[in-house]
Image 1: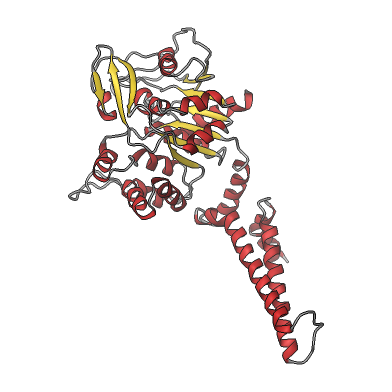
Image 2: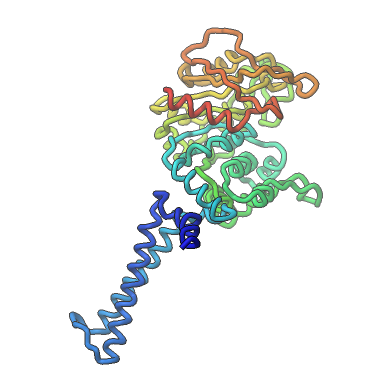
Length: 415
């Protein structure tokens, strides 16, 4: 009896977590029973037991067996839908039960749209997945540097690097799989500098025929929570106009000059917004801009016609996550207000309701060329400032994933 109690406590508790397992197991049991009835019809006829006959025995028996098989298949589909990804991502039964409990809560979380690119967006996503599964990451496609830039030029594809980082951030897969996806080749003619994940996404695009399908398949492999959507499927180039009138072409070139940036533009000027990106924004509970490079990660998304218009129409809380530190060549000397003004200048005054700002005093000298982004008390138009401890103690120029997500959720629940 003690062994049965232990087995029930350690293993069968998963049946009572409210994720629909019992209904699928009952469906499967019913399927087995119906198949047994069909076989009984056949053997009963062979043994001349003659069960009550409504239709010819072979038809009745065949119908029952087919119905039972259909119910068994429905049972297997339901179990996979409830547990499939979690089983692959779980080390043992205790871990599986813990994951199921977490996913039960996160499946009911708010619909959050995160807009950006670069490392910052993946940092945010890594924290948000602990609170909700209903995440849509809208990712810039203006990247033209490094491995992504090479693949973009050689294969005529959207740059996969930022998508790869976001996939890993939203993944529930084992660490070995995520490490493989992030692995970067250090040698090999043509391979050096490329990451495995970038090559995987491009190869999957060739197999499936579309970038969207490649992202979905990569998401299945890494058990991703949420969706990743390009801001546009068009091949765009980011342009920046400096304060002296100089025009810089290419995302990777924009931060090299030391002069202030006046405006950024896209070429072509009117790329078509991805319909899933627009729909996600319109249906969102929260829209988050950043964190990330202001002019090369956040604003390129807002420059796509349809994105900022959808944000304006959306009945959602709108949050801008301000960088912890200034970015050399891009936001030199910027304080919190400067970041907000730059956003408003390129969009409209009500683009965000809150600016989430780091409140920790950090010392960047000797480790980083930028300066801490501070709030100097400048009055903002429309936006309110929320200060919180969101800097990473080990890497002070970065945000802490958990702290960042916690503050976003607090703003959502309190507003």
